[in-house]
Image (cartoon, rainbow, N blue to C red; front, side, top):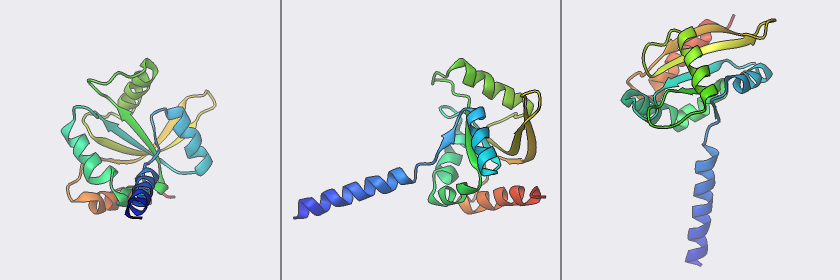
Length: 155
């Protein structure tokens, strides 16, 4: 009987961990389709996932917390990674580099909030709502700043 209860706890625990897994897009066109359909802004997370200490810290202290998971329903999550050790498809590298240049990202981590639309010529148009980076104080402080950025541009 104890084994059955233990197995049930493991199954339920695994399910809870999996249900907290957030959907991060790395393809901008796919993320834009979701943004257009849901009418949610994009959160663009510029990171160096395998070398940037502050990026790793932002992930650990904010982006991988239950508070952020609950809050993230307000946006479409996009990770724009610039790894040094992990291989990426060339089209993802090119896309990330273009967005980095377009938004003048000079350091990591940088998080931009944008509203995306497609112009008549097929080009992506980004309305910049605001940006942030690593903010000390944990998820509450970071999310308050993110809410401020989103609230200032809801006209």
